[in-house]
Length: 334
Image 1: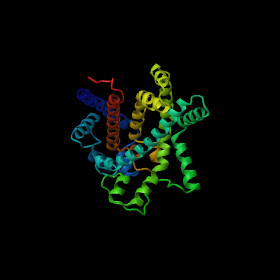
Image 2: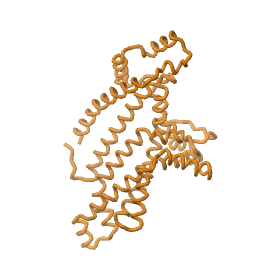
Image 3: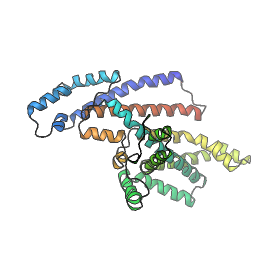
């Protein structure tokens, strides 16, 4: 197992290098000049040239890339052109918000999706099966931006149940230690702030978790139906085992591999930045951060954020591969 993990970590290097080259070229080919955006349309050519030299934008592309790569190897993602702050410090402030939202969304998606998939498989062709799979189809097809706007319109504007944006009401002041508001509120022993932060999570988590929930439900149902038709399941039932034991101890454990794969992939996508959800709900995460960087032609922000997203995605997939060995002891990595 250790050898396998080491090989996967080594494979991470060429992947990140390829992603860095691709993103660097794409972002520099996008029309627009960061110096022009910073100085405005009335800036003189001399002022533009001076700022481009200060930012290093007057250098050839290959020089700019190798300079960026050299900084990355030392743990420096550069400074934001817009704010002049280190990109790594801004990511440290924003990534916890994305992690918090992603964990909450995936928790809801897994609990509801797996439960609905199991019940649908056990009660195949029942009313519950038809209704749940129909809702899952709608969930997969529903655009996140439309769902988010409808949630805000119904639950915030009309009913006033949930806040429409941000992570915490302005009346609360938290001394941040981790930038995870749920954790920081508990460290501050502020139960009201904890509940308020949790309340702010509900609508964006529901909007973000709808598609993973639907995919997980359909995959769980499909995998469970395949396992429930196996000979050893019929043998277990013939031995007189209770339905609960047959479903959860024998069927579910063997049906989990494809479900865990889907959960890992979806969780990687969520951690990569829920751009639409974070934009609609004004959630200060990496998804919204990269959109701001693209709009401002902030090269270091875009490049650093994409590197973080790619690294996160690869590590999540590695964790999923390791979990396989715990779910199915027959799987061994050499």
